[in-house]
Length: 187
Image 1: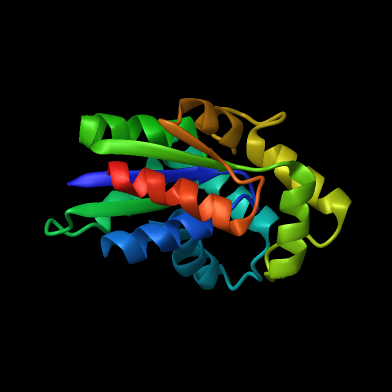
Image 2 (image 1 turned 180 degrees about the horizontal axis):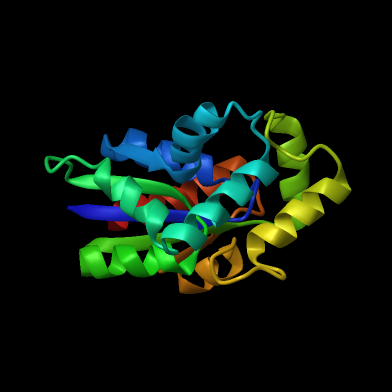
């Protein structure tokens, strides 16, 4: 089984990459944030915000180890899956777990874009969980990238450094699509 991990900054285009992988390769994916949304948040009857997702992920990693969300994602995989995509990797412990489990069959793709561009995208997509103001966005983005975070916290900046491939999404949609297609052709 080949496992493709996706990491990246908020609003960078990870969902687009995941959707292209699903469509082009005919694979299914697991979004780590969906695991949080469906399992824990519904039980706690909490309204979803990105800050709450971050807190919950940190809480689980602190209690069960930095690899816990990756382990849960692996548990969702079927033995018949030839390729699986895990989207939303936010901590190096998740990467280390997946590398140990799958070895050379694990590839990490990171997605990034300039902060102002990402903010505009986040405002445009208008998800309930997304920050609404520039100040909220910067705070969430800095935390997400690991600023002042403990080892079990959000560490997207370190995850990007660990990636096998980093896609810069700073041009047109067509340009980015070509970059993603090039990656897909190497898988």
